[in-house]
Image (cartoon, rainbow, N blue to C red; front, side, top):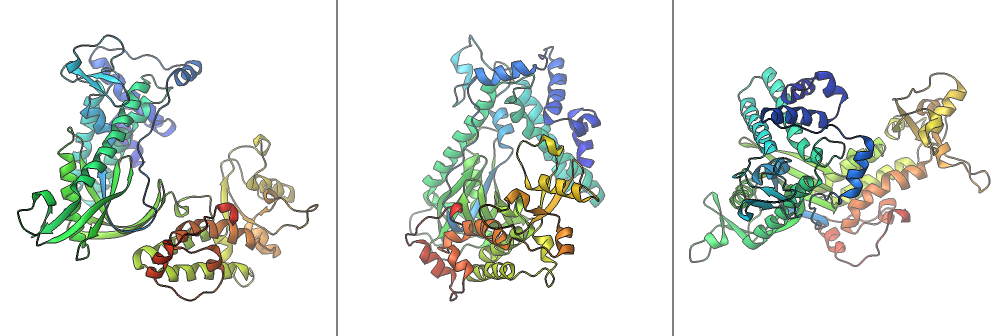
Length: 511
């Protein structure tokens, strides 16, 4: 509720509109008032037909740049982040609906051309309305975060809701510009924003690669070209960009001699950020966000990191996961728990062999499953899906919908539309003629326990546990057989050595 109230105040929208409506309504409320102040009118909302034409007649909206990651285990990574990237791009380049050049243009010296080809007048000719609104919101958020540092616990709660509401608003303007149902839809503007973003991340990588090396000398970071004549006397580190995603850059530090300390990482991260920021138009800014002692990159937007963040004079650590099964509802609790434990063992302790042993113990537990002896596992194996509409409205059969029908036939309490339906997968009949389809093998956990029904442990091992953990262990040369059978202990270094051996690639279908 604090967030909704803060959004209502920041955008000038009614509270019920915030709860029931989308972000476009909040953006339009801000822009309508501002356009009225300068005696400009805003077109009405387009009907559905016009919305479709807008998509068809124009080119496709292109997203941000995502660099291909260096897959596998990576150590000592500085994470740099662009502060409010898309809003500051709009402010820096005067990108606005009121500054788009559609036909005749003024002097070319007063034209800003985006990498995507969109043209906008410079602020010298006409300051954009939207950049001014964004500046006010950004200044308010900066001031609110400053006040949070001195506020009491009760005041901090309200201030935190306010800064979060301002963050949502700031990040809504780009999406609004590319939304075909918006009053002020402009694909030229939306593409200009992302094209500047793509150019920016590539330029940032080049700047860091050109720097090459950095040294920590007497409590400060120094680049190689800043050193005086003679051999450097401090700790040296080579820089290498291992990943980049829209507004974040991941830079590996390879030490020449001594290991990387948290203080070294902070000094180097801030030094790189300041250098890159000095080459950017205001108010764009690159900041040091965190340091990852270890990380695993599986693919674009899919990684796990053991990161350290600086909180005042202290460093606090946590596991940060993106695009993996610990943060998705498609998997049962045992999957998420197993993956989380494996990540902690690998990332925090470097113990790949213990992580493998943990997976083996989970597999053995499932293979020898006896619900009468281990009833607690039932909750860990429960999946849930939302029951969004009447059963007759689903075009295809789905496990949780089939279960709802079974529960209705049996009598008793039945989930209603809007509920999340919990279910487990039970063992079906074999044989080609009488084989039970997967969608018909969903069952109510309580019914399973009361009637001592056997679960399909093969499904849970091969479809729930192994696929997500294999995506991690393949980086260390661990295959399915090693997870399902006993094997001599190995060290992290032996796993790393096996990574370099050529191996046959496996897909999820092999499991």
